[in-house]
Image (tube, rainbow, N blue to C red; front, side, top):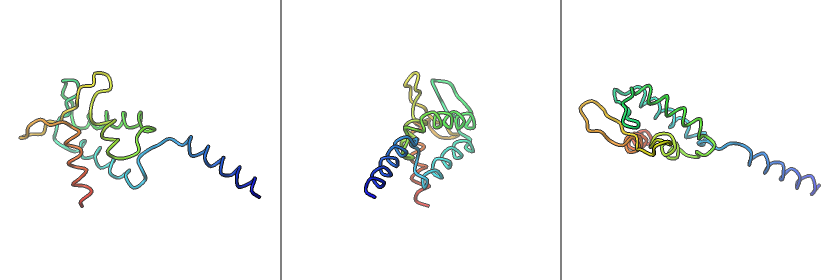
Length: 119
């Protein structure tokens, strides 16, 4: 009986170590909210000095999220990996909303995450 429990423990460990990481289930809604928040905004996303529509910015962030998913284990890490800077140039992303000053996308997303969590 001990041998069976031991083997079951090893198999469980091996299975869990092979499962890719992702945000916890309760944070999936946060990530989706942030992606939709950007896509539905009237803001522009500035990447590597070039301006993109909010929808294109959100598509880009979703691609990066899918690419880095196995390294992301929280909504904050989603922001860090997918919404902060270019992996090629390391230039920080910015968001430009009508009537407001440009700001770093990381800060913009973190503010909205806080608002979302406080609802």
